[in-house]
Image (cartoon, rainbow, N blue to C red; front, top):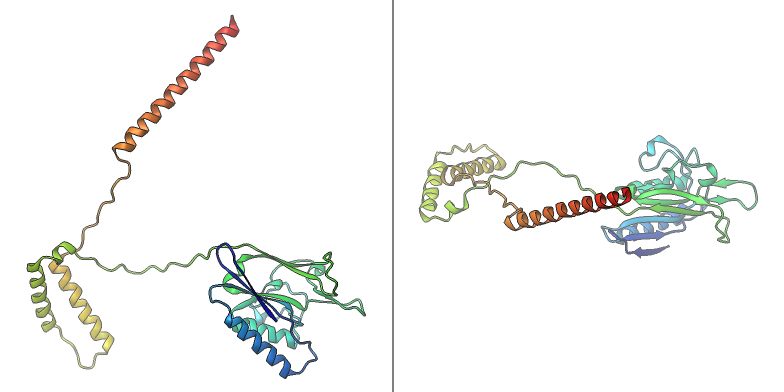
Amino acid sequence: MCWLRIRGKFVNYSIIKAHAPMEDKSDTEKDAFYNELRNLYDACPKHDVKLIIGDLNAQIGKEAIYYPTIGKKAFHQKSNKNGKRLIHLAASRNMIIGNTLFPHKDIHKTTWRSPVAHHFSQIDHLLIDSRHVSHSMDVRTHRCASVDTDHFLLVLQIWARISNAKKFLRKKDEKYDYEKMTLPEKQVEYKTNLKENLQELAINPDDSLDSRRNKITGVIHKTAKETFGKASKKQPKSWFDKECQEASEVKNKAYVNMQQRSYTTASTNKYREAR
């Protein structure tokens, strides 16, 4: 198991390479491996795009109960025990098994060929954070790579993107006239009005703390609005000033002169050709 961190254009990438125990190993050895893998994942920087790749010795099926942690394009029909362990790891860390998402021929899905019999399997996998799954363009195997092994090369095409954070609309806070708030007479008037309004406020002893806070906050805003008034919206200054107007007129005049010279030259050439 190893960890490689690569600097990207927008974000950095933390790549974890792992080799999981085989299906016939003991549960103790498998538990120790996955605990170490979880600890290594948690040690990666929070804002990195995290990838887990390698020979994980897990067969991922097409069971609907594991969507959306897995896709619908896996090679196998059912997941074995190692596959279920891998799916639980991905679900616990909000990851997606990327090579089960893309439709390919079976020869481009399988990652291992048995040296004894003509048997193929998909046991090498690539896991990516679900929030960055849109970065992956394609995942498939390439058989032509000479890597001196019975495994095929698993290739990920990734496209770095900037996350588009969702904007939640909320009510804007009221702004009051700041110039009036700096006047001493307005400050005295505000204190007097606020004291009177708070005395008139009826608070039930059975009210909760949130209810009391909302009532007091409402009185404070109401008093400020009556005393100072709302702040007037400032009109933005126009960037197209007199200097821009003069530069625009000079440019337009030069363009008209250039068009006239071009027309005159073309007319002269036609006249000469006619003669």
